[in-house]
Length: 106
Picture 1 (cartoon, rainbow, N blue to C red):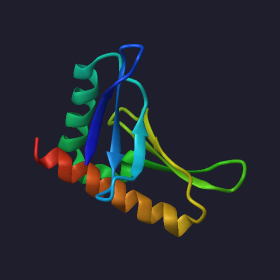
Picture 2 (picture 1 turned 90 degrees about the horizontal axis):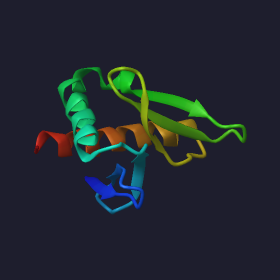
Picture 3 (picture 1 turned 180 degrees about the horizontal axis):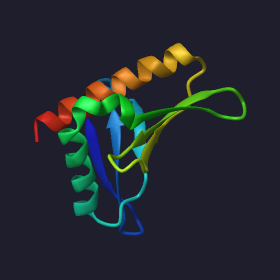
Picture 4 (picture 1 turned 90 degrees about the vertical axis):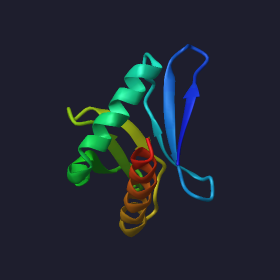
């Protein structure tokens, strides 16, 4: 599920959550609600290329994380840390399922 929030500085962000309510990915701040929703609509239109929307990364401590990119290649969100590559791949699957199933209902 996707949760939308307005920040104290009047920017907006979204969180992708699992069915159990765990935050899987948090977006960067967007200057307006319209720009946030526009970015999500672009993801919906390009769901077929969703493998290119996820950038796999490793931090300096060897933990794994995922960055979500928009269709222009800009990072618009990031996941928490995973202790294994397999966990990260499972996280991508969960993020994708939660994100795109919610976008289908819009």
